[in-house]
Length: 473
Image 1: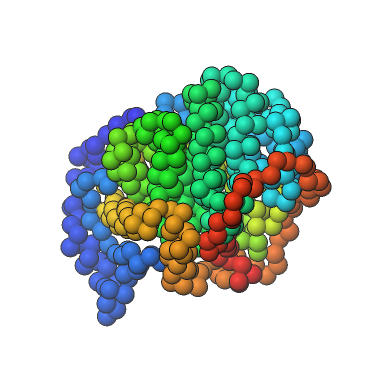
Image 2: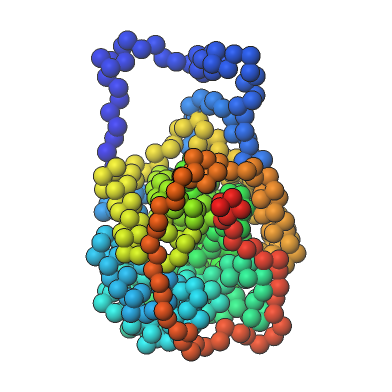
Protein backbone atom coordinates (compact mmCIF):
# COMPACT_ATOMS: atom_id res chain seq x y z
CA UNK A 1 0.00 0.00 0.00
CA UNK A 2 1.51 3.30 -1.10
CA UNK A 3 1.91 6.01 1.53
CA UNK A 4 0.29 9.37 0.89
CA UNK A 5 2.95 12.10 1.01
CA UNK A 6 2.52 14.88 3.54
CA UNK A 7 1.49 18.27 2.11
CA UNK A 8 4.49 20.36 1.16
CA UNK A 9 4.96 23.84 2.69
CA UNK A 10 4.58 25.38 -0.76
CA UNK A 11 1.02 24.03 -1.01
CA UNK A 12 -0.13 24.97 2.49
CA UNK A 13 1.80 28.08 3.49
CA UNK A 14 -0.91 30.51 2.30
CA UNK A 15 -3.72 28.70 4.16
CA UNK A 16 -4.47 29.11 7.85
CA UNK A 17 -5.49 25.82 9.48
CA UNK A 18 -9.26 25.80 10.06
CA UNK A 19 -10.52 24.82 13.49
CA UNK A 20 -13.89 23.32 14.34
CA UNK A 21 -14.95 26.75 15.61
CA UNK A 22 -14.09 28.28 12.22
CA UNK A 23 -16.29 25.77 10.42
CA UNK A 24 -19.11 26.32 12.92
CA UNK A 25 -18.92 30.07 12.33
CA UNK A 26 -19.32 29.54 8.58
CA UNK A 27 -22.31 27.27 9.16
CA UNK A 28 -23.96 29.77 11.50
CA UNK A 29 -23.40 32.55 8.98
CA UNK A 30 -25.05 30.50 6.25
CA UNK A 31 -28.00 29.51 8.44
CA UNK A 32 -28.70 33.03 9.66
CA UNK A 33 -31.55 32.86 12.17
CA UNK A 34 -32.17 29.16 11.55
CA UNK A 35 -30.94 27.17 14.55
CA UNK A 36 -27.94 24.89 14.13
CA UNK A 37 -29.99 22.01 15.53
CA UNK A 38 -32.21 22.11 12.44
CA UNK A 39 -29.42 20.34 10.56
CA UNK A 40 -29.27 17.40 12.96
CA UNK A 41 -30.72 14.14 11.68
CA UNK A 42 -31.12 10.54 12.79
CA UNK A 43 -31.17 7.17 11.08
CA UNK A 44 -34.38 5.12 11.11
CA UNK A 45 -33.01 3.47 14.24
CA UNK A 46 -32.59 6.80 16.00
CA UNK A 47 -28.80 7.04 15.65
CA UNK A 48 -27.67 10.65 15.58
CA UNK A 49 -26.13 12.25 12.49
CA UNK A 50 -24.64 15.63 13.33
CA UNK A 51 -24.19 18.37 10.70
CA UNK A 52 -20.53 18.94 11.54
CA UNK A 53 -17.73 16.71 12.79
CA UNK A 54 -14.12 17.28 13.70
CA UNK A 55 -11.36 14.83 12.80
CA UNK A 56 -11.45 11.50 14.63
CA UNK A 57 -8.51 10.35 16.69
CA UNK A 58 -8.98 6.58 16.83
CA UNK A 59 -10.29 4.34 13.99
CA UNK A 60 -13.38 2.40 15.07
CA UNK A 61 -12.86 -0.61 12.79
CA UNK A 62 -10.23 -3.38 12.84
CA UNK A 63 -7.57 -3.00 10.17
CA UNK A 64 -8.21 -4.87 6.94
CA UNK A 65 -5.50 -6.46 4.80
CA UNK A 66 -5.77 -5.49 1.14
CA UNK A 67 -4.94 -8.37 -1.26
CA UNK A 68 -1.97 -7.82 -3.55
CA UNK A 69 -3.80 -8.59 -6.81
CA UNK A 70 -7.34 -7.28 -6.52
CA UNK A 71 -8.77 -5.23 -3.67
CA UNK A 72 -11.95 -7.31 -3.65
CA UNK A 73 -13.55 -10.18 -5.54
CA UNK A 74 -15.92 -9.09 -8.31
CA UNK A 75 -18.81 -11.57 -8.25
CA UNK A 76 -21.98 -11.87 -10.29
CA UNK A 77 -25.24 -13.67 -9.55
CA UNK A 78 -27.03 -15.88 -12.06
CA UNK A 79 -30.72 -16.68 -11.65
CA UNK A 80 -31.85 -17.40 -15.21
CA UNK A 81 -34.05 -20.50 -14.92
CA UNK A 82 -32.63 -22.19 -18.03
CA UNK A 83 -29.45 -24.13 -17.19
CA UNK A 84 -27.83 -23.56 -20.59
CA UNK A 85 -28.50 -19.83 -20.45
CA UNK A 86 -27.24 -19.67 -16.87
CA UNK A 87 -24.02 -21.34 -17.97
CA UNK A 88 -23.61 -18.85 -20.82
CA UNK A 89 -24.11 -15.96 -18.40
CA UNK A 90 -21.50 -17.29 -15.97
CA UNK A 91 -18.90 -17.83 -18.69
CA UNK A 92 -19.56 -14.39 -20.20
CA UNK A 93 -19.20 -12.78 -16.77
CA UNK A 94 -15.90 -14.53 -16.09
CA UNK A 95 -14.55 -13.58 -19.51
CA UNK A 96 -15.77 -10.02 -18.98
CA UNK A 97 -13.86 -9.37 -15.76
CA UNK A 98 -15.78 -11.07 -12.97
CA UNK A 99 -13.75 -13.37 -10.73
CA UNK A 100 -16.53 -15.36 -9.04
CA UNK A 101 -20.08 -16.55 -9.67
CA UNK A 102 -23.14 -17.14 -7.52
CA UNK A 103 -25.79 -19.61 -8.65
CA UNK A 104 -29.31 -19.08 -7.32
CA UNK A 105 -31.03 -22.48 -7.21
CA UNK A 106 -34.80 -22.89 -7.64
CA UNK A 107 -36.12 -26.15 -9.15
CA UNK A 108 -39.51 -24.46 -9.66
CA UNK A 109 -37.85 -22.08 -12.18
CA UNK A 110 -39.61 -19.11 -10.56
CA UNK A 111 -36.70 -17.30 -8.92
CA UNK A 112 -33.53 -19.14 -9.91
CA UNK A 113 -31.86 -21.76 -12.04
CA UNK A 114 -34.05 -24.84 -12.46
CA UNK A 115 -31.63 -27.52 -11.36
CA UNK A 116 -32.20 -30.52 -9.12
CA UNK A 117 -29.20 -32.80 -9.34
CA UNK A 118 -25.42 -32.94 -9.62
CA UNK A 119 -25.82 -33.50 -13.37
CA UNK A 120 -27.78 -30.27 -13.68
CA UNK A 121 -25.17 -28.44 -11.62
CA UNK A 122 -22.44 -29.77 -13.90
CA UNK A 123 -24.34 -28.41 -16.89
CA UNK A 124 -24.60 -24.96 -15.31
CA UNK A 125 -20.87 -24.92 -14.44
CA UNK A 126 -19.59 -26.48 -17.64
CA UNK A 127 -16.32 -24.78 -18.57
CA UNK A 128 -15.83 -23.13 -15.15
CA UNK A 129 -12.49 -24.00 -13.54
CA UNK A 130 -13.39 -24.23 -9.87
CA UNK A 131 -9.76 -24.08 -8.76
CA UNK A 132 -9.57 -20.50 -10.08
CA UNK A 133 -13.11 -19.11 -10.12
CA UNK A 134 -14.95 -19.32 -6.78
CA UNK A 135 -18.54 -20.51 -7.16
CA UNK A 136 -21.12 -19.79 -4.47
CA UNK A 137 -24.67 -21.03 -3.96
CA UNK A 138 -27.94 -19.33 -3.05
CA UNK A 139 -30.28 -22.27 -2.46
CA UNK A 140 -32.51 -21.54 0.56
CA UNK A 141 -33.71 -24.76 2.22
CA UNK A 142 -32.20 -26.85 -0.59
CA UNK A 143 -28.76 -25.68 0.52
CA UNK A 144 -27.48 -29.08 1.78
CA UNK A 145 -28.56 -30.81 -1.44
CA UNK A 146 -27.07 -28.05 -3.62
CA UNK A 147 -23.84 -28.18 -1.61
CA UNK A 148 -23.53 -31.90 -2.32
CA UNK A 149 -24.19 -31.27 -6.01
CA UNK A 150 -21.49 -28.59 -6.14
CA UNK A 151 -19.12 -30.86 -4.23
CA UNK A 152 -19.71 -33.61 -6.77
CA UNK A 153 -18.93 -31.24 -9.66
CA UNK A 154 -15.65 -30.25 -7.97
CA UNK A 155 -14.58 -33.92 -8.00
CA UNK A 156 -12.77 -33.75 -4.64
CA UNK A 157 -10.21 -31.21 -5.88
CA UNK A 158 -8.63 -29.92 -2.64
CA UNK A 159 -7.95 -26.48 -4.13
CA UNK A 160 -11.50 -25.93 -5.41
CA UNK A 161 -12.77 -22.47 -4.48
CA UNK A 162 -16.25 -23.40 -3.28
CA UNK A 163 -18.66 -21.19 -1.37
CA UNK A 164 -21.51 -23.42 -0.21
CA UNK A 165 -23.15 -20.47 1.57
CA UNK A 166 -25.57 -22.57 3.57
CA UNK A 167 -28.06 -20.16 5.12
CA UNK A 168 -31.32 -21.79 6.27
CA UNK A 169 -31.97 -18.99 8.79
CA UNK A 170 -32.40 -16.37 6.07
CA UNK A 171 -34.73 -18.69 4.15
CA UNK A 172 -36.79 -19.21 7.29
CA UNK A 173 -36.89 -15.52 8.20
CA UNK A 174 -38.11 -14.49 4.75
CA UNK A 175 -40.65 -17.26 4.26
CA UNK A 176 -41.96 -17.21 7.83
CA UNK A 177 -42.11 -20.99 7.80
CA UNK A 178 -39.76 -23.93 7.38
CA UNK A 179 -40.53 -27.33 5.82
CA UNK A 180 -40.02 -29.23 9.07
CA UNK A 181 -38.35 -28.07 12.30
CA UNK A 182 -35.77 -25.33 11.91
CA UNK A 183 -33.49 -27.05 14.39
CA UNK A 184 -33.40 -30.06 12.07
CA UNK A 185 -32.50 -27.86 9.09
CA UNK A 186 -29.68 -26.29 11.10
CA UNK A 187 -28.34 -29.71 12.10
CA UNK A 188 -28.54 -31.03 8.52
CA UNK A 189 -26.75 -27.97 7.14
CA UNK A 190 -24.00 -28.19 9.77
CA UNK A 191 -23.45 -31.91 9.25
CA UNK A 192 -23.31 -31.40 5.49
CA UNK A 193 -20.87 -28.51 5.84
CA UNK A 194 -18.61 -30.34 8.30
CA UNK A 195 -18.49 -33.37 6.00
CA UNK A 196 -17.66 -31.33 2.89
CA UNK A 197 -15.06 -29.32 4.81
CA UNK A 198 -12.92 -32.42 5.10
CA UNK A 199 -12.75 -32.75 1.30
CA UNK A 200 -12.57 -29.05 0.48
CA UNK A 201 -10.23 -27.27 2.91
CA UNK A 202 -10.62 -23.90 1.14
CA UNK A 203 -14.41 -23.95 1.05
CA UNK A 204 -16.65 -21.51 2.90
CA UNK A 205 -19.55 -23.36 4.51
CA UNK A 206 -22.08 -20.85 5.85
CA UNK A 207 -23.18 -17.36 4.92
CA UNK A 208 -24.44 -15.56 8.03
CA UNK A 209 -26.51 -12.91 6.32
CA UNK A 210 -28.37 -9.90 7.64
CA UNK A 211 -29.66 -8.93 4.20
CA UNK A 212 -33.10 -10.39 4.90
CA UNK A 213 -33.52 -7.67 7.54
CA UNK A 214 -32.32 -4.95 5.19
CA UNK A 215 -34.52 -6.02 2.28
CA UNK A 216 -37.57 -6.05 4.57
CA UNK A 217 -36.87 -2.42 5.47
CA UNK A 218 -34.78 -2.80 8.62
CA UNK A 219 -31.94 -0.58 9.79
CA UNK A 220 -28.19 -1.01 9.71
CA UNK A 221 -27.68 -2.05 13.34
CA UNK A 222 -30.48 -4.62 13.15
CA UNK A 223 -28.96 -6.04 9.97
CA UNK A 224 -25.57 -6.53 11.65
CA UNK A 225 -27.14 -7.91 14.83
CA UNK A 226 -29.09 -10.51 12.86
CA UNK A 227 -26.00 -11.49 10.86
CA UNK A 228 -23.90 -11.77 14.02
CA UNK A 229 -26.51 -13.88 15.81
CA UNK A 230 -26.81 -16.13 12.75
CA UNK A 231 -23.02 -16.52 12.64
CA UNK A 232 -22.97 -17.62 16.27
CA UNK A 233 -25.83 -20.07 15.67
CA UNK A 234 -23.99 -21.56 12.67
CA UNK A 235 -20.70 -21.76 14.59
CA UNK A 236 -22.39 -23.63 17.46
CA UNK A 237 -24.02 -26.01 14.98
CA UNK A 238 -20.66 -26.73 13.32
CA UNK A 239 -19.10 -27.39 16.73
CA UNK A 240 -21.85 -29.91 17.46
CA UNK A 241 -21.03 -31.47 14.09
CA UNK A 242 -17.44 -32.04 15.22
CA UNK A 243 -15.52 -28.89 14.23
CA UNK A 244 -13.58 -26.67 16.60
CA UNK A 245 -14.95 -23.20 17.32
CA UNK A 246 -11.97 -21.56 15.61
CA UNK A 247 -12.40 -23.72 12.50
CA UNK A 248 -16.13 -23.02 12.46
CA UNK A 249 -15.73 -19.25 12.50
CA UNK A 250 -13.08 -19.52 9.79
CA UNK A 251 -15.64 -21.16 7.49
CA UNK A 252 -18.40 -18.57 7.98
CA UNK A 253 -18.80 -15.42 5.89
CA UNK A 254 -20.90 -12.37 6.75
CA UNK A 255 -23.52 -11.27 4.23
CA UNK A 256 -24.48 -7.59 4.25
CA UNK A 257 -26.22 -5.17 1.92
CA UNK A 258 -24.85 -2.07 0.22
CA UNK A 259 -27.15 0.71 -0.88
CA UNK A 260 -26.92 4.12 -2.50
CA UNK A 261 -26.19 5.91 0.79
CA UNK A 262 -22.51 5.11 0.61
CA UNK A 263 -21.60 6.86 3.85
CA UNK A 264 -23.97 4.59 5.77
CA UNK A 265 -22.74 1.55 3.82
CA UNK A 266 -19.12 2.37 4.68
CA UNK A 267 -19.91 2.81 8.36
CA UNK A 268 -22.06 -0.34 8.47
CA UNK A 269 -19.38 -2.59 7.02
CA UNK A 270 -16.75 -1.12 9.34
CA UNK A 271 -19.09 -1.61 12.31
CA UNK A 272 -19.72 -5.20 11.28
CA UNK A 273 -16.01 -5.93 11.37
CA UNK A 274 -15.87 -4.59 14.93
CA UNK A 275 -18.82 -6.70 16.07
CA UNK A 276 -17.40 -9.79 14.40
CA UNK A 277 -14.00 -9.23 16.03
CA UNK A 278 -15.58 -9.02 19.46
CA UNK A 279 -17.70 -12.17 19.05
CA UNK A 280 -15.05 -14.27 17.32
CA UNK A 281 -12.39 -13.15 19.76
CA UNK A 282 -14.57 -14.16 22.71
CA UNK A 283 -14.98 -17.58 21.09
CA UNK A 284 -11.24 -18.04 20.61
CA UNK A 285 -11.46 -17.69 16.84
CA UNK A 286 -9.87 -15.43 14.24
CA UNK A 287 -11.10 -11.86 14.49
CA UNK A 288 -10.98 -10.92 10.80
CA UNK A 289 -14.42 -10.88 9.19
CA UNK A 290 -14.93 -12.12 5.65
CA UNK A 291 -17.69 -9.92 4.20
CA UNK A 292 -19.77 -10.47 1.08
CA UNK A 293 -21.68 -7.29 0.20
CA UNK A 294 -24.57 -7.43 -2.24
CA UNK A 295 -26.26 -4.37 -3.62
CA UNK A 296 -29.63 -3.56 -2.12
CA UNK A 297 -32.68 -4.70 -4.05
CA UNK A 298 -35.03 -2.49 -2.05
CA UNK A 299 -33.33 0.67 -3.41
CA UNK A 300 -33.95 -0.19 -7.08
CA UNK A 301 -36.79 1.40 -9.02
CA UNK A 302 -38.98 0.10 -11.80
CA UNK A 303 -39.74 3.62 -13.00
CA UNK A 304 -36.87 5.38 -14.79
CA UNK A 305 -34.79 2.25 -14.24
CA UNK A 306 -31.75 3.79 -15.92
CA UNK A 307 -31.13 5.79 -12.74
CA UNK A 308 -30.46 2.47 -10.99
CA UNK A 309 -27.02 2.54 -12.57
CA UNK A 310 -26.14 5.47 -10.33
CA UNK A 311 -27.49 3.70 -7.25
CA UNK A 312 -25.57 0.54 -8.03
CA UNK A 313 -22.32 2.42 -8.61
CA UNK A 314 -22.76 4.26 -5.31
CA UNK A 315 -23.42 0.95 -3.56
CA UNK A 316 -20.30 -0.56 -5.09
CA UNK A 317 -18.26 2.45 -3.98
CA UNK A 318 -19.55 2.19 -0.41
CA UNK A 319 -18.92 -1.54 -0.24
CA UNK A 320 -15.38 -1.15 -1.57
CA UNK A 321 -14.43 1.70 0.75
CA UNK A 322 -16.09 -0.13 3.65
CA UNK A 323 -13.78 -3.09 3.09
CA UNK A 324 -15.96 -5.81 1.57
CA UNK A 325 -14.02 -8.88 0.48
CA UNK A 326 -16.57 -9.80 -2.19
CA UNK A 327 -18.97 -7.41 -3.93
CA UNK A 328 -22.03 -8.47 -5.89
CA UNK A 329 -23.79 -5.70 -7.80
CA UNK A 330 -27.26 -6.37 -9.10
CA UNK A 331 -28.53 -5.20 -12.47
CA UNK A 332 -30.27 -1.92 -13.20
CA UNK A 333 -33.25 -3.89 -14.59
CA UNK A 334 -33.74 -6.16 -11.55
CA UNK A 335 -36.96 -4.40 -10.52
CA UNK A 336 -38.43 -5.24 -13.93
CA UNK A 337 -37.20 -8.73 -14.76
CA UNK A 338 -34.21 -10.84 -15.72
CA UNK A 339 -31.18 -8.92 -17.03
CA UNK A 340 -29.99 -8.86 -20.61
CA UNK A 341 -26.30 -9.25 -21.45
CA UNK A 342 -26.10 -5.44 -21.67
CA UNK A 343 -27.40 -5.06 -18.10
CA UNK A 344 -24.98 -7.68 -16.79
CA UNK A 345 -22.07 -6.00 -18.58
CA UNK A 346 -22.96 -2.65 -17.03
CA UNK A 347 -22.98 -4.25 -13.58
CA UNK A 348 -19.55 -5.83 -14.08
CA UNK A 349 -18.04 -2.73 -15.59
CA UNK A 350 -19.18 -0.50 -12.74
CA UNK A 351 -17.03 -2.56 -10.38
CA UNK A 352 -14.10 -2.75 -12.78
CA UNK A 353 -14.06 1.02 -13.24
CA UNK A 354 -14.15 1.55 -9.48
CA UNK A 355 -11.33 -0.93 -8.99
CA UNK A 356 -9.03 -0.42 -11.96
CA UNK A 357 -9.60 3.19 -12.99
CA UNK A 358 -10.72 4.95 -9.81
CA UNK A 359 -8.30 2.79 -7.77
CA UNK A 360 -10.87 2.35 -4.99
CA UNK A 361 -9.49 -0.22 -2.58
CA UNK A 362 -5.81 0.68 -2.88
CA UNK A 363 -5.99 1.92 0.71
CA UNK A 364 -6.91 -0.49 3.49
CA UNK A 365 -9.37 1.82 5.24
CA UNK A 366 -9.88 5.10 3.34
CA UNK A 367 -12.55 6.34 5.76
CA UNK A 368 -10.32 6.05 8.85
CA UNK A 369 -10.04 9.39 10.62
CA UNK A 370 -13.20 10.90 9.14
CA UNK A 371 -15.14 12.38 12.05
CA UNK A 372 -18.51 11.55 10.49
CA UNK A 373 -17.66 8.01 9.43
CA UNK A 374 -15.89 7.15 12.67
CA UNK A 375 -18.76 8.49 14.79
CA UNK A 376 -21.39 6.67 12.71
CA UNK A 377 -19.33 3.48 12.77
CA UNK A 378 -19.17 3.61 16.56
CA UNK A 379 -22.90 4.32 16.89
CA UNK A 380 -23.90 1.49 14.56
CA UNK A 381 -21.49 -0.94 16.22
CA UNK A 382 -22.82 -0.14 19.71
CA UNK A 383 -26.44 -0.42 18.58
CA UNK A 384 -25.70 -3.65 16.71
CA UNK A 385 -23.98 -5.09 19.77
CA UNK A 386 -27.01 -4.22 21.90
CA UNK A 387 -29.27 -5.82 19.29
CA UNK A 388 -27.12 -8.94 19.23
CA UNK A 389 -27.28 -9.16 23.03
CA UNK A 390 -31.07 -8.80 22.92
CA UNK A 391 -31.32 -11.63 20.39
CA UNK A 392 -29.11 -13.88 22.50
CA UNK A 393 -31.05 -12.99 25.67
CA UNK A 394 -34.22 -14.06 23.86
CA UNK A 395 -32.73 -17.50 23.31
CA UNK A 396 -30.81 -17.03 20.07
CA UNK A 397 -31.70 -16.01 16.55
CA UNK A 398 -34.33 -18.72 15.95
CA UNK A 399 -36.18 -17.88 19.17
CA UNK A 400 -35.92 -14.15 18.40
CA UNK A 401 -37.47 -14.71 14.98
CA UNK A 402 -40.26 -16.88 16.38
CA UNK A 403 -41.12 -14.42 19.15
CA UNK A 404 -41.37 -11.54 16.69
CA UNK A 405 -38.46 -9.63 18.22
CA UNK A 406 -36.70 -9.25 14.87
CA UNK A 407 -39.88 -8.45 12.94
CA UNK A 408 -40.88 -5.78 15.47
CA UNK A 409 -37.54 -4.03 15.04
CA UNK A 410 -37.98 -4.05 11.27
CA UNK A 411 -41.50 -2.66 11.55
CA UNK A 412 -40.26 0.18 13.76
CA UNK A 413 -37.57 1.09 11.21
CA UNK A 414 -40.09 1.03 8.37
CA UNK A 415 -42.43 3.27 10.32
CA UNK A 416 -39.65 5.74 11.12
CA UNK A 417 -38.53 6.11 7.51
CA UNK A 418 -39.78 9.38 5.98
CA UNK A 419 -41.20 9.53 2.49
CA UNK A 420 -38.11 9.19 0.32
CA UNK A 421 -36.82 11.51 -2.35
CA UNK A 422 -36.13 9.10 -5.20
CA UNK A 423 -34.61 10.46 -8.38
CA UNK A 424 -36.83 9.54 -11.31
CA UNK A 425 -39.79 8.62 -9.09
CA UNK A 426 -40.65 11.18 -6.39
CA UNK A 427 -38.04 13.74 -7.45
CA UNK A 428 -37.43 14.88 -11.05
CA UNK A 429 -39.59 12.18 -12.66
CA UNK A 430 -39.12 11.98 -16.42
CA UNK A 431 -41.87 13.24 -18.73
CA UNK A 432 -41.60 9.97 -20.59
CA UNK A 433 -40.12 6.81 -19.15
CA UNK A 434 -37.36 5.44 -21.40
CA UNK A 435 -37.91 1.83 -22.34
CA UNK A 436 -35.71 -0.87 -20.79
CA UNK A 437 -35.19 -4.35 -22.17
CA UNK A 438 -35.37 -7.41 -19.95
CA UNK A 439 -34.81 -11.07 -20.66
CA UNK A 440 -37.75 -13.39 -21.27
CA UNK A 441 -37.28 -16.79 -19.69
CA UNK A 442 -38.90 -19.97 -20.88
CA UNK A 443 -37.79 -22.77 -18.57
CA UNK A 444 -39.74 -25.57 -16.99
CA UNK A 445 -39.56 -26.78 -13.41
CA UNK A 446 -37.22 -29.70 -12.84
CA UNK A 447 -37.59 -32.64 -10.44
CA UNK A 448 -35.54 -32.15 -7.27
CA UNK A 449 -35.24 -33.66 -3.80
CA UNK A 450 -37.68 -32.23 -1.30
CA UNK A 451 -36.48 -29.86 1.38
CA UNK A 452 -38.98 -31.10 3.97
CA UNK A 453 -37.61 -32.76 7.09
CA UNK A 454 -39.59 -34.91 9.55
CA UNK A 455 -41.47 -33.05 12.24
CA UNK A 456 -43.71 -30.00 12.58
CA UNK A 457 -42.97 -26.82 10.66
CA UNK A 458 -41.39 -23.92 12.50
CA UNK A 459 -43.09 -20.55 12.06
CA UNK A 460 -42.19 -16.89 12.58
CA UNK A 461 -43.43 -13.50 11.38
CA UNK A 462 -42.04 -13.31 7.82
CA UNK A 463 -39.60 -10.61 6.76
CA UNK A 464 -40.98 -9.95 3.29
CA UNK A 465 -38.74 -7.98 0.93
CA UNK A 466 -39.91 -4.52 -0.08
CA UNK A 467 -38.99 -1.92 -2.67
CA UNK A 468 -38.94 1.57 -1.18
CA UNK A 469 -40.08 3.17 -4.44
CA UNK A 470 -42.96 0.77 -5.11
CA UNK A 471 -45.76 2.76 -3.40
CA UNK A 472 -44.84 5.81 -5.48
CA UNK A 473 -44.42 4.20 -8.90
